[in-house]
Image (tube, rainbow, N blue to C red; front, side):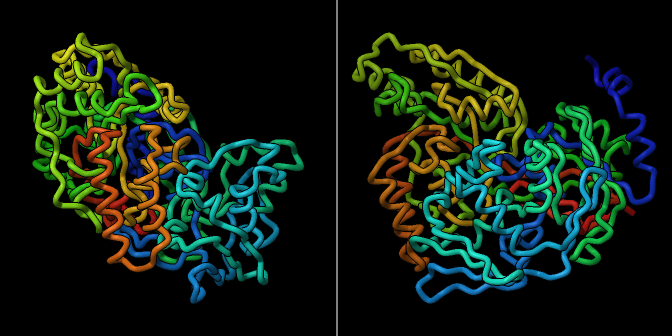
Amino acid sequence: MKIAKHLLLTAGLVAGASMAQAAGTLIYCSEGSPAGFDPGQYTTGTDFDASAETVFNRLVQFERGGTKVIPGLAEKWEVSPDGLNYTFHLRKGVKFHTTDYFKPSREFNADDVLFTFQRMLDKNHPFRKAYPTEFPYFTDMGMDANIAQVEKIDPYTVKFTLKKIDAAFVQDLAMSFASIQSAEYADKLLKEGKPQLINQQPVGTGPFIFKRYQKDAQIRFAGNKEYWNKGEVKVDNLVFAITTDPSVRFQKLKAGECQVTTFPRPADVPAMKADPKLKVMSQSGFNLGYVAYNVKHKPLEKLEVRQALDMAINKKAIIDAVYQGAGQPATNPMPPTQWSYNKSLKDAPYNPEKAKELLKKAGFPSGFELSLWAMPVQRPYNPNAKVMAEMIQSDWAKIGVKAKIQSYEWGEYLKRAKAGEHDSMLIGWTGDNGDPDNWLGVLFGCDAMNGNNFSKWCYKPFEDLIQKGKATANVGERTKLYMKAQEIVKQQVPLTTIAHSTVNQPMRKEVEGFKVSPFGLNSFYGVSVK
């Protein structure tokens, strides 16, 4: 379908144009539909933008546009000398949202913190038994195993007790999955026999109040006039105009039908920068795009096979064609801006002939067949997974490996991949908290085998290093451990690292106060439209 025709026919665009003229309305052309609105259940920016960054707050949060942890629903906190007890002093006078489906009778307090974390900790929690769900981030980082207790000291004081030191604990609590839910709202849903609505009709304390959602079309929010952080809500209405095609997002931005968009095609960035009505904020991405090899599937359990697949990929050609000047070759399982990055590591050179030799040594002189999954959506770390998959398919064919490209709707893609249905897959990561464990532990740790460890790789020498690193407070010691862990990843090849992409954030000139998140999130508190 041609773009012009698509623009005329797409539902809601005419309404979008008139809304853009309304005072106090900001329209964001987002890239996809969220899987739901309960942040604890999810791991992607598409889900977090529509929930954690709008409807919810956390005990602590990251400074907008940065990695520094600042107070959120907790005004201050203390850590015991042994590093095992964290005491949070909660903010008073914070109100949960009043909506057409819930009217709170009290303000935020310790009971809400207890509900939020006990639901994630306890599989027999009444709410979780009524609405069974998993909390992948929480478990991927081993928090379910390490948090011994969450206690209410008084209505505005909460204490977390850990079994062992977790050097990144406060940073972890600033992440989207740790968004604080209303215990009173959960109790209402439980009594009504509708606990699943916590994922469809969210209630939080955040800067925007959820109004309604139409899948694949739009999400509407209202500015929270009673927000505790005065002055941070600068628009009356926030609309996510869900637009999966990047070319259409660009057309809508040019036409003024949205003021901010995301994930432009690299080829469109020069035209965006040349348009006098637009501006493009750019920064090095805190991200990684890669190919994960499922080591639980034959013959990918063999190191020689993974090494052969790795050195058969023409990484430079992929970066030139897919990233078009907006990507840097990735060598390590974390970006160069992450502290503890090991600069001494080198990629195996592109060498199809050596790859054939390795396959022959592994017992596959004629190659083999495998599936190669490609995401259906753009991500910060991969602007075009379809093209990348086709190029890798062609590279592997040269060594006798026949790759069948498969794709699914984004939520289904992640669900099936976590279940380990794939042989190999394109995936990636944008850092969440500035800590090395957020890369090494979350993507390759044994705790993450049923979550974001898409390689299904649990390797004791590596695991021992990252667990020791997480339980060590000294940054110098942690750095040594993580550098060694990166060496092991390079030796064992559970993945092929492809690229770190540059993040380009286009918007109209009249948008003020927007800050690009190092974590790939889109936040609209503090943002206004002239």
